[in-house]
Image (cartoon, rainbow, N blue to C red; front, top):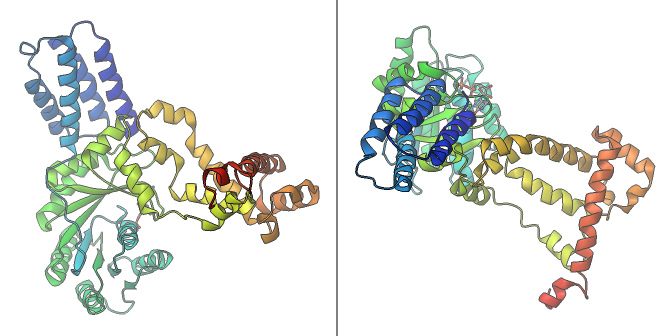
Amino acid sequence: MVLNELGARINGALQALSKEPVIDDKALDALLREICGALLESDVNVRLVQQLRVNVKKRVNMEELASSTNKRKVIQNSVFDELCSLVDPGIEPWQPRKGKQNIVMFVGLQGSGKTTSCTKLASYYKRKGMKVGLVCADTFRAGAFDQLKQNASRAHIPYYGSYTEADPVQIAMDGVSQFKKDKFDLIIVDTSGRHKQEVELFAEMEQIAAAVKPDNTIFVMDGTIGQAADAQARAFKQSVDIGSIIITKMDGHAKGGGAISAVAATGSPIVFIGTGEHMHDLDKFSARPFVSKMLGMGDISGLVETVQDLQLDKNEDMMKNIAKGVFTLKDMRDQLQNIMKLGPLSKLMGMMPGMSPEMLKSMDADESTKKLRSYMCVFDSMTEGELNSDGKLFDDEKRLHRVARGSGVRMVEIQALLMQHGQFGQMVKKMGGPNGMLSKMNPAA
Ligand code: GDP
């Protein structure tokens, strides 16, 4: 069962409890049966599910709680708290400190998403103003350095690696000392995820760790691996001192429960989850907002962080235009681009409180994201003069044909886009200009 469905099922069970006329042990058992069944189907470790059942039952004392309202509340709160403790080992995660040269080492099996996550993390801290460098210490997999180089270049992150040096420990040391010399704030070392023998892989990780002395070791785990996660996490934990965890591929159809249970095996906190293949698809993880979002209760803190993080374009040109009562196609494009920077609309909507998984499904936010992308192709096919216009130029069908051919978007859709632009333009016209609402509100504008 994928996480959205898990959330919906737990939510459904809690709602059903609200409708029960009498809250007794029988009702509680039925609720726990449903919740535990759903958790097991999502690959959450059996021991943990059993623990959750015992803990909730311990917290809910039917005799002591007088009214049914109280009982419902206590049950709901304890289920929520227990779900949170499934994903929260109660340890404050390590954070890189500004003004210090922080070294982070990535470990995890090949294919888990290690290299991708290294670049995502580097990019995350670069956006926070840190000077970040990437070191590729994977000499086992042919092409590992090229992949890191490609990802890093795309994100404009400095990198270090070698085509000739075969010793990963040497590369790790050289890379770290070079970035240290150049006063980098955060140095991320990517290691190999496979060897001929598992013992060799772990031995190599230990040697690299001993050589670069990381401040934090991040274990990367594939969110789709199910029950095998527990054994995998234990094996890594035995060799290296895992400081934190990143779970990848939590987009789409990941059950996630297996990897999430790995938290208990390592006792280390999940710090981020990977939600796609792109650079921005890395979400900061905190237990309560995560559970809240899974149950359709939203994640306001995540939404605020996403918006702050992206440093959206303030677009002063557009503000000046609007004050004058002008709204060009370029203004529209810039605004839509801002919306797209926030990520897929489905992800944003999932952070809104009250958006249940069913509602999200019915709104088909992914369709809207696709539409926005097609609008960008339309804008890309326009000339500078057309973009800076109010759109009336497209009364000329020849132009419309040209843009449709160039963008691969149907003419009717372009006409719909122009109509939306025109309607908004009318509003702006009323608001702006010397006699507009804006000038009355703020005569200096
Ligand atoms: P490594 O061998 O552990 O370094 O794994 P890679 O970083 O090469 O990733 C393996 C594959 O997983 C690549 O195709 C990545 O694009 C993909 N991948 C990594 N993270 C995510 C994620 O969060 N979501 C999805 N959908 N794919 C991911």
